[in-house]
Amino acid sequence: MTKKSVCLASVALPVAIALLLLAASSSVTANAESSAATAAVKIDNFVFGPQTLTVPVGTTVVWTNSDDIPHTSVSTEGVFKSKVLDTDEKFSYTFTKPGTYPYYCTIHPKMTGKVVVQ
Ligand SMILES: [Cu+2]
Image 1 (cartoon, rainbow, N blue to C red):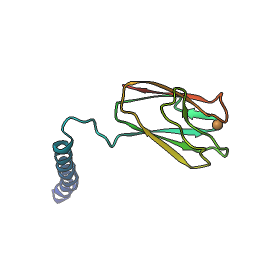
Image 2 (cartoon, rainbow, N blue to C red; image 1 turned 180 degrees about the horizontal axis):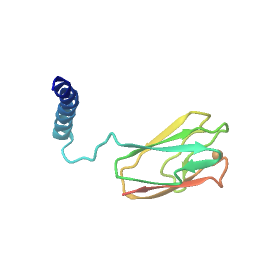
Image 3 (spheres, rainbow, N blue to C red; image 1 turned 135 degrees about the vertical axis):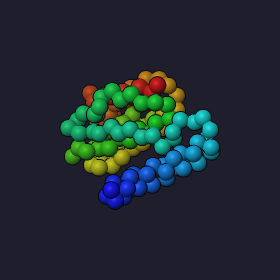
Image 4 (tube, helix red, strand yellow; image 1 turned 45 degrees about the vertical axis):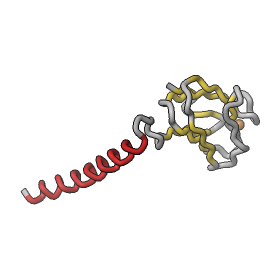
């Protein structure tokens, strides 16, 4: 009995806080997509993973170089361009318009990937 109510309280409190935060943020940003959304692309063994990443508008995509070798993430159409990323370095870009965004590594042009923004 007591165990159950303690358990319930430990669930109810975070939920209440989450709802409060949600209410607070939605009143400020009205109709905007959740601007905190992020998605990850991992660069490893000369591969962008996932090679095609599909995200909603407003998502910040974070590329992380998990390889031992420097790489870049550069939009084929000039939309974004990372610096040379050494091991464990990150690059992020926020996609605000729907579309398909192909990109590649300028050091190894055969390395390609694509972000689809919906
Ligand atoms: Cu590369």
